[in-house]
Length: 314
Image (spheres, helix red, strand yellow):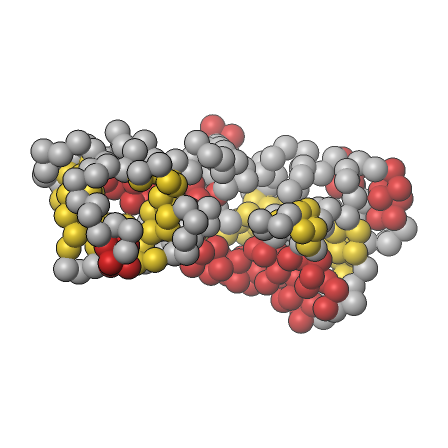
């Protein structure tokens, strides 16, 4: 049994914490980013990993900075065997990394060195990749650049969007992390392979620019970008002065309709809106208008979009 420090913040981290608890290893401390205001009311809410840790009566720390001497002193007094990082949200300094006997290891949901950075799941979906994967690596002072301890491929399914893919990769990643942890427990070490720096690809933080459609994009790029952002935050455009989010779409035609890109060309009986693109058209099946809940294209046509043919998304 190993004495562990677990560092994580969002919902993606929760399956890993649960499975490590089930494995019987001692979790001496859970570390999460500080609680933040969320939702329309901006109410301060505990992070998902803090909520899970509280269910199991685990010790929790939420330092503003992991370089805080008081926090480092607490870690040093725990006599840790290993540190585990799953989407914590900060680069760890050497003063922290050197504390556990076996160092820190990290779960990253991509086949590193491809998609280093904060949004590997979104990047894979937006690129239209058909294969992604799980990497368990040693943590060093550079972002997602440590030696690889374990890698496994995961197929990206045609029906995957961010929510579906996120949940599946969180569960699969938790399994891989536990497997590597067991190797350390049995042998006190684990073979690692350096990453090839020349193959590194970085993915950006998701911002408003990433989340907004450019109607100069081809249909396939719009469809893939919508998958990478669904259901939240959603791929945004605007319609008649309101934000309009495309949550589910598919390529319809690769022959130009003659309409300006972004024009709603037709309402189809299969409950979809056909929208012109620079290289053909796409079908919008699910959407959300500013001030409304998620709806099907048919709900839109039956309501505010009853006369939308010929209008434009911009």
